[in-house]
Length: 294
Image 1 (cartoon, rainbow, N blue to C red):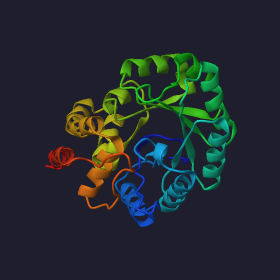
Image 2: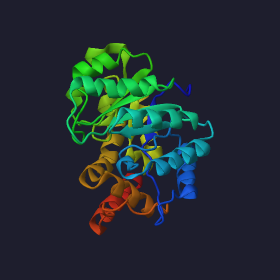
Image 3: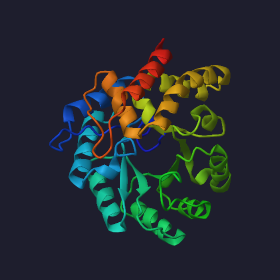
């Protein structure tokens, strides 16, 4: 895979932070190395699972440094950029590009609602700040100002806006987007969708936190979908779905961090005031992992 031709499984990485607010470099690097060894197609730091909304710029910058170094060119790193202002979004974009990111995942944070022109200008400004492929992130469940279909169609005409990651859980909406933009944007699913279903309608893969916990199984599902072995793919998808259900039920970062702790990664708890995964949640995640690998 060309480092600028993205497809497959991109785990959304957690951001391990110690009590002093420092990135736990060794823990994050080990996770990246193990995920690459498991066959994932790339890494996606500073997504929702990576707690972008809770990190300051210094922490974000260090996360990208560690992930780029750990990846070592073995797969693309798509760095999350999220801000409330265009100036800050462009600063992050330029800095992460200089640090060696291979692509940008563009997320819009908004306290006050933003109209369609403002949303367009925000994402267009990120594309203008770099030569990297940009992935639009849309999640109407969390975002105050989301990407409407007309805005997505306008942004799809910008040459380096090449991908869209949809976390709406509405696969019908996803198909509508695909019909509207044609080949101008390639589509990645999220854990909120059934990945095999998105692959069936033409998706390239998925970017999702649960792939951190089950990378080999996620890659196996992708390969079955690519081979159009749909019966086998759906059998594996059903086994993976329990993990997705736990992810949807609990705090995103808490669920993945808790699952990684179960597997021996000292990633710690989500940043306060978020709460760690409850004992019930840990039991559910462990049961889902045991069932998947049993």
